[in-house]
Length: 191
Image 1 (cartoon, one colour):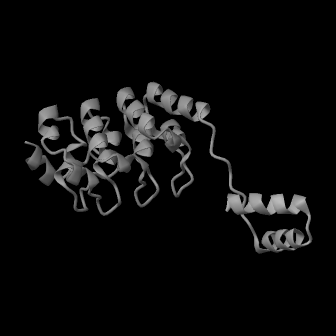
Image 2 (image 1 turned 180 degrees about the vertical axis):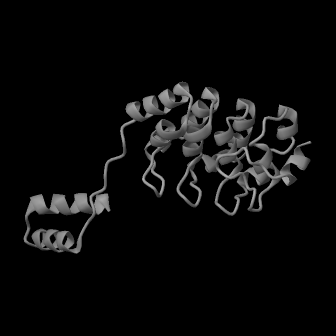
């Protein structure tokens, strides 16, 4: 049963399914293909909101395993904030789905909940599309991440503001130059 699986180590899960870190039963069972009713018994807002030591939620595990879409949807509905929250390495559930998920429906569900995730980078500088290209054997899942990344423009890059830029824009603003005032406002907005 589901509670028994939570106590047994797993070598199947590419993201390290809590084998060495404490987690709740839902984290472990989301990585297995169980009858929906067994896993659904474990889905609750409390369990979905709990994080493992590595910062992952149940949604990270469900997305990576490509579990049944109804389970993924229930976990997402129980704690929607998880789709926007990275683990300690900067992996969102979208990165997990891109890397390991073989389910088109699960990948689409994760991306429909947070399409901007396609442009978010891990601490290693990888987007979900990068992870899909490098690791996912499913051409359909790769195509989904590529298509969303192509359709959704990346966020505007923020230009770093240096002390020199701040000093020159402040002195120009004091001199009364309207062009400099607009530049100063643009820099302030960008920061």
